[in-house]
Amino acid sequence: MARIFNFGAGPATMPLSVLEKARDQFVDFRGKGMALLEMSHRGKEYEEVHRQAMRLVAELLGLPGNYKVLFLGGGATLQFGMVPLNFLAPGRAADYTLTGSWAKKALADAGKVGKVNVVFDGTPDGFMSLPEPREVQTTPGAAYLHLTSNETIGGVQWPSFPDTGEVPLIVDMSSDFLSRRLPVERFGLIYAGAQKNLGPAGVTVVVLREDLLARCNPNLPAYLNYRNHWDGDSLYNTPPAFAVWMVALTLEWLRDLGGLEAAEKLADERAGMIYGVIDASGGFYRSPVKPACRSKMNVVFRLPGDDLEKRFLEEALKNGLNGLKGHRSVGGCRASLYNAMPVAGARALAELMMDFARRHG
Ligand SMILES: *Cc1c(COP(=O)(O)O)cnc(C)c1O
Image (cartoon, rainbow, N blue to C red; front, side, top):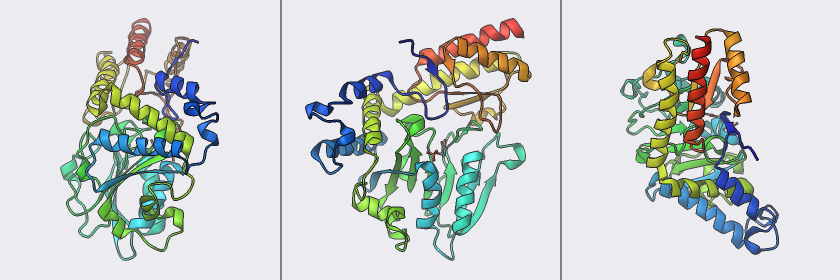
């Protein structure tokens, strides 16, 4: 099999060793004569997988004991609604930073639930920059501050986070979760769809701090209330068992790689190669994003003109470099360089970019 380098934004590339392990255990899980897909989520085998996945997220993040890791359905998109449904109580307002396409969706859903304040609006410069964390002023009495740590489409990433004091900080980390070390105690809630950086589609990881439970709206339908998932350790109802298993395998791979410190180093290395080529290209390649907030996960770049962009993407495909077309809403090119992208993939792309610029520059 000739495995390609998949630069797609999500669902995204996964570690080959994880896919192979899953393949080997797919039909006969741990010698039980049936597949995990066929097993009860209340049985011992699945229970072990589930606890292992919870434990590994906690271990990798260095989570204090007052946090729990939850595995939910509905994607990050359901969190856009669940966050305000639980925490945006009547008479309060929530603060939102508007930094790109994903933040916009989170804000729109919150606006349907209650009152929102936009404390940073990146619209005027086309979402090409982020504020300094200390410039983000929360509103006194705000229910929480929501931000999107990495804008997967626009390619901006918060290098560090605001200190929000008493106001809980709630962050959509779908596209950079577990790619770097974090000051975890600063966060009230983190959510991330698995299909970018930690496994397949179908499960969303939520990291929740215990004191937020007291604020959950008790009048929600059962699934929407975080408290039910907390109390049941994400076994309130049938969890997305197969996806959780794939996440567990990916987390083991990440731990063996050296955890978040190693992930951070590799992310710097991969992104450094691509931005390095962009910056050394004499304007042939252009990153639209302000340098201080360039994403290390999704490198967005343009070539001089649609025609060259089309030819570049065709050549990339011929060279086994897939998924480089920018999001349909912004065009251009985008290289997604998540944890599972081998450094060799970033190097192959950097080399093609240099060669292409030499021939067409
Ligand atoms: C992909 C993505 C989402 C949406 O995730 P779904 O699982 O499709 O709901 C939300 N936020 C960010 C930052 C994303 O990258």
